[in-house]
Image (tube, rainbow, N blue to C red; front, side):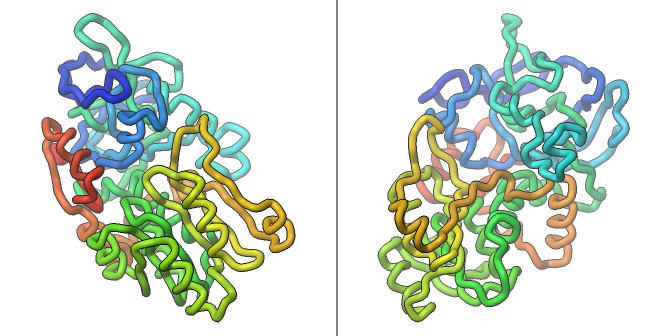
Length: 369
């Protein structure tokens, strides 16, 4: 089978639209026809070299679509099922899955290589070269073969072109506030960066009952969106936010700070650390080059004030629990998705979509097939 896909062949290069050969599904795999794909910042990290995968790779790790074929032994799905893809696969059997930490499933070790769980590839170029799929998905393709462990079945009436965001950005942001930060009613929460993840941390903190939700972003359009979706206050800089938080808490400090900027650096993590109270927590959800140190704090204050720094992957949640729950919340009007989507694109316009993301035009962009 042939499929049109957006392929990244190296750092600093644009996505290239190519026709690839797609193998049929093997045991435990399914053929999916994508309906929509989210333009998440993590794929832009690959293009800029903040994270370096195995090249070439089909981009895209937020996807939703319809199952067309299933391989041997597939028990979770059948042709015609509508699914949202989890950017982290879940095997259900490794040490971490057995301990309830499915977001740390061992299958996730291959997400930047782009191969399937058996170590092989389903995308191939005309020359026979193996092409990976971002997060074992490759949602910037009309079709893909993926693991059943990456698919969460949803009802046929769920609008996939909106719910596609629940594959990564929504649960990651929401869970950063609800699971990782453990926001409690009455808390003051500071959120650094109001992009596709940060805006959902705002929604999560507000729904969890935080009294003050302070959204920090230099772009006015993103601050305005944050205030529409649950932020009680917004600031254009960390210094402005620090002064406001001191005022709101009578000098105590924020209970939790969540770092969701596009590229994490020492400046933002230090600012977040100083913004929280004694015994407070900084949740670091944003990414950066894993070979660089991006956290620099005074160790004495870490000890004397018992502050905490917590990493968070997939919002520290469980894809097979959180994705259906967030779909239900969306359909009940509690979580907003439609409002997040600033622009939609065709696959051919994927580079334009990422230019808009980098330039701050979009809160979220979505490719619709």
